[in-house]
Image 1 (cartoon, helix red, strand yellow):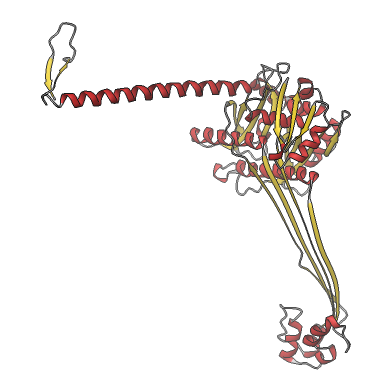
Image 2 (cartoon, helix red, strand yellow; image 1 turned 120 degrees about the vertical axis):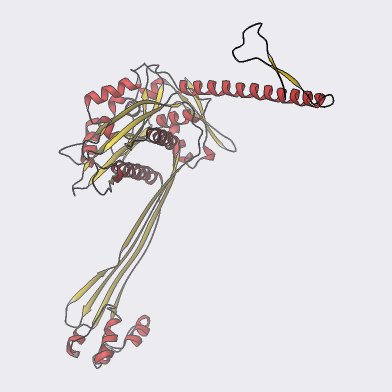
Amino acid sequence: MAKLLFDLSRSCFGIFALLMLAASPAVTAQSKTTVETEVTVTTEQLHGSQDSQLATSSDQQIATIPTSRTPEETFDDWLDEVGIDDGVNSKDDGTMFVVVYGEATVNAKGDPKKPKNRWVQARNAAYSTAVMLAKAEIADLVSAEVQSERSSSVMDMGGDNPPPMMAEPAKQLSVMDKALTLTGKALDHQIKQFDPEWDGSGMSDEQRKERLVGMRETFKESMGQLSRLFITGAMPVINVEGNDEEGNYVVGVGLIWSPKTQAVAQGIIDDDVTLPIDEPEPKIRDQIKQALNDDPNFMAVSSGVRVWTNEKGEQTVVAFVGLDRTKSKQKNKRESGMRGRVMIAQFVAEQTEASDQAETEMVTDQLMDDSSETFNASTFESTVKAKSKKLRLTGVARVYKWKGKHPVSKAKMLVDVWAWTPSGRKQAAQIAEAAEKAEKKMNKKAAAGSSATTSSGSGGSAGSDNTTTTVPASGSKKGATTKKKKW
């Protein structure tokens, strides 16, 4: 049994976490100047529920390339098979968990089999984008600030008595009777006020007059939303990729978040947190081998962080890192190690912000020849940002490596698996402590030696500057004569 203390007042995620955790019978809260919640996490809580099994069991998680279904359809099929919903899922005990889906296109150019084209790198970018979009969905579920503004107007260029708000436009554009008296360049100028691309070269005045606008209808609408959330413990439970309905190669990811996965994430950086020990499973590398036996594409498709149980019953955070395979083994390992640790840090805590802005402008012109033209000047801009905290990770080590080709693109790739365990953290701390002691001991000896040398040197200089040192002759044995050398 472990006790985990969260200072929710310091986190943007506090309100959401408090609502989630307050529903659990194992949570107690006491109001003070700041809100503190003491959470007791038991083995039954961590592994006894459906969301916990999905989040912590290797045989419950999926990495696949469907052949007859799109990635999104495969995700929907998985939801039906498992019996959960996309979004918030409520449980009988009053708690809940969240499952969301994100998808992005692999924007790669050139022959993917050529390493210089970095196909796997483009795929990794699509995966990261899909994860951010999924996390943005979680932020939207919690809270979104929404605003809008819209208007509709009609301008009739005929008649002599325009309404007050149209008086100035009517004055500038003139009434249609006056416009109809214009000719040549003056008539072209009148048309260009509504059609900047107009070119009346070679046209008669009658043809020009047919292009005059008699009435203009305009609709404008502006809307936007902003979502921001500090997310801890969100992780993928399904990796899926393949062609979508338009034939684009896409990467999809299904994320899960629950108070249990949040507790595991907190345990990575909090030395005072001891996660419960579960029933031992095979070694992580043996679980990976089993997954490869079940699906040869498992390693090629897997990306991101999982939480599995190792042979000691420990909760193990496992990061799958895929890279374009290069000839430099140093580059391959150093880069994969960096990316693996970053993935774990993103699992621990990441600030996600999503903003969307839509500007709609529809303009319909009724022309003098009774025809009409519609112009759409609408725009939409969506931005998702995610930033992880600076963390000190200890005990992360590579536990498996795989080399092969991507089953679809045939790009050469490697996948390294990096893992964090509570025992690994303790071992790393012991190594660091031993290294620190050794460093202090060496520094102490070096300082003592420096002091002795200084003292000896100052005493010798007062006597003779001819110091004789005995140097053994090369290959000399015991009792052999020695050479004397003056320095």
